[in-house]
Image 1 (cartoon, rainbow, N blue to C red):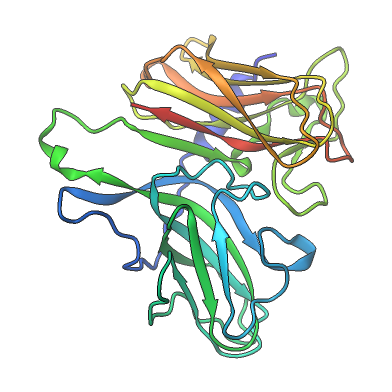
Image 2 (image 1 turned 30 degrees about the vertical axis):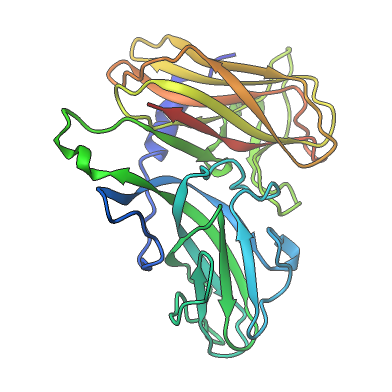
Length: 327
């Protein structure tokens, strides 16, 4: 079943919202001996870390202690960000929230090597939980967080990543269309609410992903999730990968990149089907594409996933996101 045009329009409007960091550190860098400079690729925010035990995500459960350093990995399979940050990323744009600090302290974010003598965030006792923009470099997808004094909880959401870009191509005939474009679980929504479907981002488990809940789908209709995708006009799509977690055998799973044409027709740009049922953890589905050329004058693009295995209570199937590579 194809999502209604009204939903696709609402998804496209939602996709125009952006998040920008307010503090940029020097640790986000590139090879300055050439024309390379880091450029920011924005994504729908995904949760990489939450140290609070009730909603724990990532390696640190409980407050970060005085003088403690925690290493975070953007490829960690149990987070919403798994599969959304490319291996060639040189830095991250994040929203960081420190909660429940016991002393006035500072947090330092850095990629590797000796800890820099700098502050990325300054938590203090009694402060409301306000997110702050922090940019940090990464080394092999990893970065470190150091807390100076007392103890504090930390929540980290990634809203974009930096990749090297050769600005010596500025004399080329047009902008580059190459890149990897990622959409996380938060961007997905149930595409047929008329059947009583709702989306949950934690389903009581606190570890991310998008579920279908209130699964009322009579008449053989399969419940689905959809998210808008913004792609550069004229780009050629070379790879599409969908990410999901499947803790029980799925009766079916279909993931597709679709084009909603202006005349109301829908065409499938890339398609994947799987009945894979890993016992736990992260899985991914390489989706077949015909190297389609992006044409934003004709299409509004969206990614959808549908399965008969979503449930209202058990953690059967959840969607983590999608990555689309173009040249």
